[in-house]
Length: 439
Ligand code: GDP
Ligand code: IMO
Ligand code: MG
Image (cartoon, rainbow, N blue to C red; front, side, top):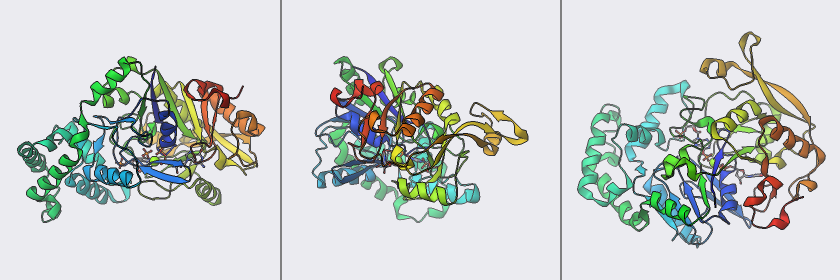
């Protein structure tokens, strides 16, 4: 049975939560491998909506082994709140396992995230202000505090002192903030430690043993390829690697344990936060797509920027992630457009043309999209359950995308609900019921 990685191939919010929940039906283990509660993964089932930030999107399947891997940064308050909320809604969370090596978001990380953004002023990244960047920075500086440190008061206190020391200057204005009081912080975090202790485990071993038993593992990414700290639109990125390769590091498995990589893209583009977005739209069309698609952040509620589908960026993501299949979500949102545009090339200053994603930040900031116009459709797609149900123009739109990036479409989203999907022949292997697969 394969290890399958699910990642976003745009700027996040592509529908990873929904796809992971769908695949979790067949999977034995679901593993989150990077990011933190900057993520907001929505699952809509039977009229109920779930917004998960740290919990792997397999958690709604009773007892399913759901792993928060070592590559994730955990805000333990958010984690325990999420556990409480799930229990309140009668979800069985007994399958949760948390890596002892995952790093913790501390109160000072959130303050530093805030302060950093305020200091940047107009140049700010538009982070989620959840402390993600400062936490990963401490991890790299070897000043991080890990889940296992919560289990020993002495060690925890020592590590907090060591982590705070080099930050004195930047935290000066918060000196009197009660959150930063050593004793208060230690006690608060020890309490979280008691709560999560039953879930703490050697998760890399758990995943490896499942692979040895030939089980199906879904590695669930957060954010998206263009937010990758190495390959994205730096510095307007997150502080982890949302690309597929990071699944190995963030879960503790080797590259040979990954058999498939599914890239999730919307049928158009969105971005939340600052940074280049070559196909961005504004005006009434942007407002219409934002409203139809409900494009408001799951985590921060911010209105998402909206644009046409960018195939130059998608081809770049295909290359970075070795995609084996595409999932195109939110096709339903495009109904009612007479013409649909897809970006097939960038044009820069001096009429320079770019078939490939530019490596130079200044170039990228100045490019605009060149478009191919494709016919739109008026039909409502939400009841379509097979490719044959789709209007001809919708099928051609998908075919154009697949041909351009040379990756087959395995799954199509036609609504937020978990049943509002179309499995194609390319996705058949991952689908529980062969009957729903179109010929
Ligand atoms: P994630 O972060 O990648 O998991 O995505 P989010 O949950 O942040 O945002 C995706 C949004 O689109 C959520 O509100 C989903 O319920 C919704 N969604 C997912 N797939 C579809 C689809 O095919 N059609 C429509 N209309 N909505 C979808
Ligand atoms: P999911 O998993 C969309 C964006 C922020 C900001 C940048 C850096 O739901 O797709 P950070 O707080 O990570 O330091 O912010 O990254 N960002 C996301 N955008 N979806 C996400 O997650 C995001 N997580 C972070 O808006 O531009
Ligand atoms: Mg999201």
